[in-house]
Structure formats: C-alpha cells, structure tokens
Length: 280
Image (tube, rainbow, N blue to C red; front, top):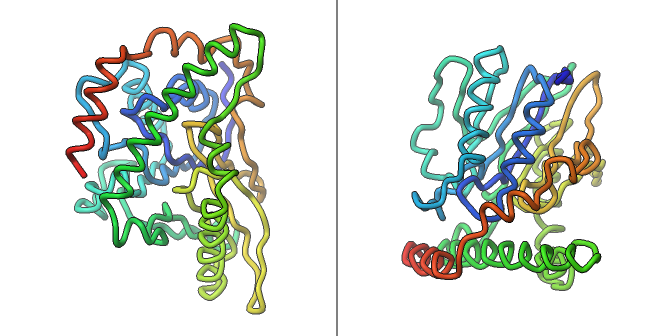
C-alpha cells in the first residue's frame, strides 16, 4: 500500500479495550499514512473500563502499528485524557520517539498550536468523577446495543443509525455542554495568543474559525474512533478532517466482520457492566 506523507496527524478517543472501538478501521487508516508527527490526544486506551478478558487482536494491532510507525521515524506524542489519566503520573516520560505529556505546544509553519485532550474543562470530571465513569459504562453499552441494531438494520436493507448521536442531538444540555466546551477552549487560546487549539474529549469532529472581541483562533477537534472514525491531518499549511468512510470502501474490510467475530454473549456483557461499575 502506498502511504500518504503528512506532516502531522491527530487522533483521540480511540478507547481501546471497549466494545465500541473500531480498531480494525483505525489500523487500516494508520497503515495508509506516513506522518512526521503523530499526536495521540487522549483516551487512546480506556483504562477506566479495561478488562483483561476483552482485548482483541485488532486492538493489539493498533498498538503494534504505532510502535512500528515510531521505528520508521514518526515522532509520537501521547497526551493523556480522562480515561487514561493513570498515565499522568508519568508525565514528561520520554523513550526514543515517544513522549508522554498532558498538553503540548508546537510551532507549525510559524503558527502556535496548542494540543490537549479537554477533560480539564469538564465540570463532571472535576467534581463527580464517579458519575462520569458510570456514564462511560452506559455509553459503551449503548454503543454495543447500537451495533446489534445496525446489524439487523443492514440485514433488512436499511441504513445505519447512531443511537448515541440521536441522544446527544436530542438533549439540549448535551448541546450546551459542547458549545460551552468550545467557547472555553477558544477563549483561553485567544487570550494566550495561539493560532490553533486542538482538542478531543467530546467526540465531535470539527474545524472552524472562532473569534471574540479579543481576537480569533482556529478550533479543531479530532473526533473519535467509536462513532465518527475521524482524524485531523496537517500538511502544507493546511488542516483537513480525515473521515474513514470517505477514505476507504467500508464494505471491503467491513465493520460487519468485526461485529460478527467480536460480539460478546449476553452473560459476558452483563459481567463486564457489573465488574466495571464497582470501580465507581
């Protein structure tokens, strides 16, 4: 496969170790690119919900792919998120081409870019972490149920639907949270003179210019590999949102084949929910 050369790639919210992670799709995407810099912008491994009985080969292959990219010259920054916050005790760790950090500032062709996951702006994370963890369990279960719904929907000749997107889009509080998140991130970025602010956390892929009475900044969000399957790419002074379904034929190495191979039985799902809930 001919790899596309790009200067910088940002992915976030992969949630390796959960049923909703589209690891095969991510591995296919990573295999297609040759970035100078790869930024893993938080929630790559879902330590909150990690279960040693659920770690498919496809999830390990993502890790192996990233290691291989480092061995061939890619600089990798792992920026911690809330689901992998345990890694924050190792902030500033460096090993070869791998660097672990909580946030990052890079010069991109003379412009300042600020990268961080974004959970610092989440009030639930600050004051009710148990509630955030409970919500993560519910979200993972909803994604799994969504996979079952889509499986039968496709068999019936109908299109896919996203239950979690419908929930988010139908709840005014969720929409307000996203708006508040973006406003907070861009206001702080403008105050500090950044040209770009790049986040994850809210699973909402986006590239847009934002301004206030103090200035302007480009806000970017890399989305996720649960629902949107998106990444940010920077090359030749330009940002683009890479969308998996636009880059590849989903029917070639379909998600259905992962669904059929990896769907847990009801007993395993129940045990997963019960055991994980004890962590909150």
